[in-house]
Length: 188
Image (cartoon, rainbow, N blue to C red; front, side, top):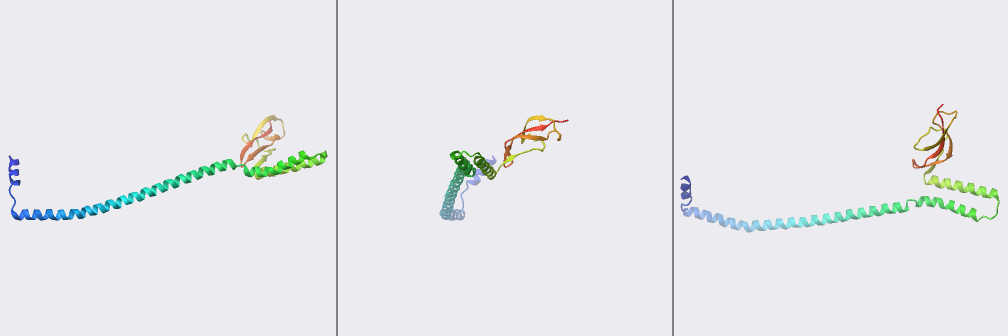
């Protein structure tokens, strides 16, 4: 029953003064809406411009990243392809010396020996320039990472000490290329 009383109260006619105030408020709201719509339209335009600018910035950054990635891949490929170039340049004089020795027809054994010794020095120099170093561990403690034991022999040295080297080992920048073949002293 209370509901019917509320409905009847809300349906009572408004006074002329109240109707005039409500009409004025509607006119003001109607006048503000075009301004509000224009302001909203300007904000929307600014937001869309900002979105376009950020999208272009994103696409440029993405393209730059792809270019950097592609250049880095090309650099790695070139580095792999030409990594041995410097070492090969150091070996060319050795190749020239060997070809000159083969072209020599004098038959003098001392000259041939001197030529081979010179060629060996050139080769050793080229290896050192390429950071390839010979390992000659005579008298050192046996290291299975750098040495390969062929046999154990009785010796006066401490047990597990390298007695002789059958074949030199080689390292490049502290990485073993080939372990030295060695004989090791037996425990007593």
